[in-house]
Length: 193
Image 1 (cartoon, rainbow, N blue to C red):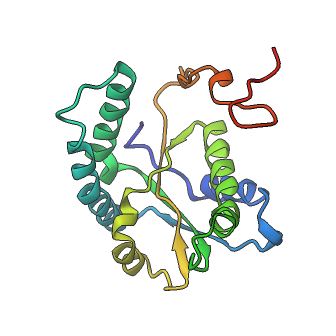
Image 2 (image 1 turned 90 degrees about the vertical axis):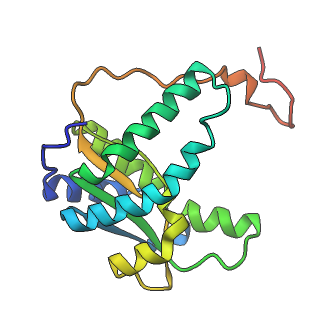
């Protein structure tokens, strides 16, 4: 990440305009976005994230990890170290609170904002910026809401650090074979050969 290069507000707004073309339940468009680019706000959010992140990562210290998991943990460690230096953070939100945890309610609620979050991340990537979806600050959601002036009837969904990337040598993420995680017509029914 290029932590010294500012991210222009117009680039973030352009990416958000693309993001909100995503589908949303009932076309309600309940998404809301907070962009933080002032140093004091970013530092305060980074500290909320770090309070959760330190304990979370400590849980991995005394266990044997695969090479891939170790790389992920190293990446998370790096983010923890530099989060207060990113040029911008974006906090996607959605109007309302999830009172009913029934699967239909949770799927509808978060399903009305997450496609836009992913679309925002793709728009960033196409402009040479990187981001990652993080949620550890949500352990301290009330403190983040107070810091950002978010009303009680609005739910934060994630925190996305945003920065220009250094280089463009990206590779596809390592994933297992799709046949191992896909069922056809019924659970554990393999896909057609």
